[in-house]
Image (cartoon, rainbow, N blue to C red; front, side, top):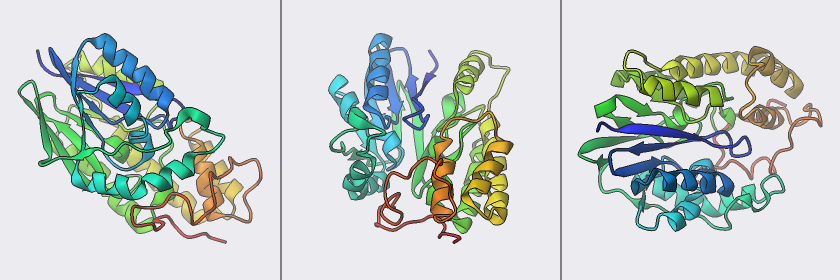
Amino acid sequence: MSLRYKVFLHSYLGFNSNSTFLYGEKDAILIDASQCLSDSHRMAAEIILSRKNLTHIYVSHFHPDHHFGLEVLHHAFPNAKVVALPQAVHDIVFTSSDKVDLWAIDRFGPDIPSRTFIPMPMREPRLELEGEEILFYDDIEGDSIHNSIVWIPSIKVVCATDVAFHDCHLWPIESNVERRKKWRKDIASLLDFDPRIVIPGHCDAEKIQILEEVQDDPTRTYTDCVKWSIDYLDYYEEVYNTARTGAEMVDLMFKRYPHVKAEDFAIHWQARLLFPHSSPDWLTPLPGKPGEIFLNPSGGYDGDPPKE
C-alpha cells in the first residue's frame, strides 16, 4: 500500500499544534510530540489502536510543543527511536531547563514534564518507511530559528511544522522584522516541492477534516496554509508598524481574524512584550518576565524590542 497519514490536532492549552502519523501496511513514523502530557497520552492511545509498528519519532525543532510529550511516547513505544537533526538536538539540550522552568506555571499544572527527553541525532537527513524515503530539511525560518520541514516524495506531502499555520494565530514573539522577511520566503518555498498537500504545524479542527478528505481524493489538493500564513504575516507587519498600544494591536488582529481562536493568547503576549506600559490587565498574563522568557538556544531573545 502507498503511505498514508493521520494528523493529530492537540489541545488549545497545547497551542493547537499538530503531530503527523505517517504509516504504511505495517510500520509507522511520527512527526513531533506535543506540549501537554495529556495530548501525548491521547495520541499514544490512538497509535496503539492502529496496530502499526512505530519505528521512529522525529522532532522537528526545539519548541516544547513538539517535544515535551516524548517521555510519554517513549514509555508507550520503547522500541521506537526518538530522533532529530543534529541542530535540533543541540537546541533542545541548550533550552531544556529554560523551557521546563518557563512552562512550570499554573496554566499547565502537572501537564508538562519535570525534565526533557533528548532525541538522538540523525546521521543523515532521511528515514525510510516501507521502502519510501522521508526527507528532512533544516535551517528553515518559522516561528523560531532552526525549524525543519518534512517531505514525503511518494505521496507529495510536506509537513510544514512551525513554518506554516492555518486558522491559528502565528507566533511572532520570537521573530523580528528581518527574520519575518526570511520566514515569509521560507513559507513560499514550501511550494517549490510541487506538493499535493501541505500539512500545517498548527491549525483548527476544520483543517484536520479537510486533510483527511483530500488524502482520499486524488483530484484534490491542499496547500492553502501557505497563502494563509503569508497573508497573516503581511497583515501582522502592518499592525506592528501602526499600532500604538497593546490593546490596539490585539483589536486590529482580532478584527481581521475574528473566527481564529487557536493560539489567540500569542497575540496577547506579543502585545504585552511590545507595549509593556499600555497593555490592559485583561490581556493574558505573560508566563514570566520579559527578557527571561522565549529565549533562543544561545540564551538571547530574537523578538522585536519594546515600542515603549
